[in-house]
Image 1 (tube, helix red, strand yellow):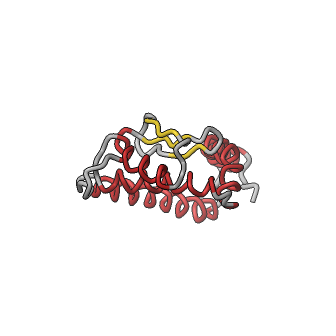
Image 2 (spheres, rainbow, N blue to C red):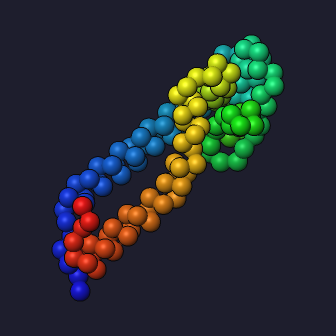
Length: 152
């Protein structure tokens, strides 16, 4: 039997989903726009990251290519800065900006910046939550339809 759904579920979920899609669209659109603008020095993202790391005494931090689109990140456990192909090989303003941002995380790690330590500690839980989130949303829909009420 199909029961009426609680409209509060939609009042909470739809704006959150729309905000997430909007933020993702803005990041991708800004990256695409500035990936067409060549950096002033012609340096690729990898070269810019290496230059920033070396200038800050971080020659021990490796710079590697990683698959994916905007999958760039700094791994404080292995002291490795990983850049996606669009950043690693590209001499654009967007690539240099993303690489500089990630190099900044390595500098924060060197300075023992507390918020970076907190962020790093939260990564496993956030990754699990990203995997579990869609399942919880679908379970909520199912429960509202089967049980006839929401748990909230």
